[in-house]
Length: 137
Image (cartoon, rainbow, N blue to C red):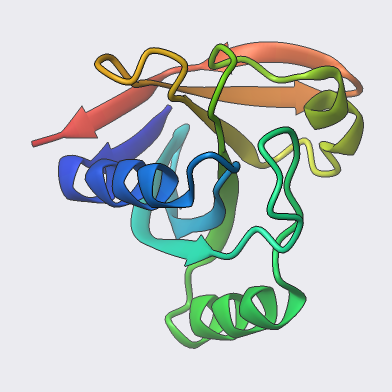
């Protein structure tokens, strides 16, 4: 289960809305307790592709985020990106590019702007399964 605070969820939402019409992206870091991944920090990164259909994270921003994660003795828990015009599920490209079976892949759909939908997925050997998200108030 991925556990995230509502404030962090709101950060992801605001970052994704600000990136429209393009996809947004970022990293999630925190701690692991048993089967629970507890998000301590959300890293809001720039989509250097500036595309509504795919994303690439800024490498320099990634290095800075990883340095901060190590400094705080956290673990990289996963990444997120938005789908401005499609549902909250991995695209074929998302599945193809999922490189780490230990990461959570969060997708925020803004397809219905009045009802954003966030889901987390595990992607292992091209097989997608939904991961439970718990949003703490």
